[in-house]
Length: 399
Image (cartoon, rainbow, N blue to C red):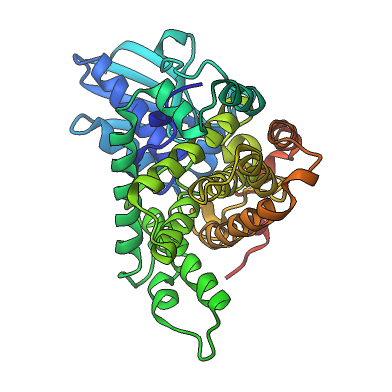
């Protein structure tokens, strides 16, 4: 498996696969052809169908500036190697210098067709959770120690940057109001949720309100093109920081505790990314929100010092009950239902943590099994429910 640096990416929203990935691809392509004086980029599949709503064309043009670029939206070509496929062409005085075919495979990661050597190095020798767990037991180490062993101690500095960026996104988001751009008239709600105490607020009600406020805050920042961390994607970036920051403020966990939680959450995300998918265009929203909820549940279990079986069960429960979740963003925007889903998944992660505390040793389903199931379910989803905005809420919605 690749480094957590490939999973937790710091950048601007609103979409890791539609904005970050194409932007990274354009930057690399431009650097590869310094003699070019113009570019042409063709977007296919999901990138073409929801690219305008996700600001894909804007992200690519900005990455190629100040040189001129033409963006083409091809919604007809079939037989693509991945739903998020694009071609980039470089020209000098009208003559083509080169062409890349790139797939934006989720979480901001890109894959270049015919260029396996461009893939990031594998730093984790094991990719199944069962194998990782067995190894940690054999060596008598914790999951976060396995992360450190594979990544090196420098991973803690990177995770420190990740955690600071996550917190900053929450704090920015709960201070901002107004309407999100895109034409749907969606109002920011995080500030309202954070400030408006229920007239008869119990401890449980406050938890629900605060976690939702934090999730809305990060998701609204993402939708507004703010700086966030993919966890594992932009569209699902609010779940993990919401539950982790709430629990830190509630229980007084140290930042060191939080980094260990992020390490374990990232390990879970890496297992999903390696053995299934974190791309909504490939496997529906279960691959994004389901994965984020699973990561959050595992991260919480770590900071509460649960054992590996309990961490696994928390992650498994969180994923299992998102199976089949469709990706149907209205207008191709990462707003409806995406923002609300981050809040709901945050609460579900806390519920999964609670169940793991009580029921772990009665379970029948392994985490690896539910990851395999998620991938097969996602591949079976009709294409209209995989980030094309052609089905579900995106089709039924009228103003």
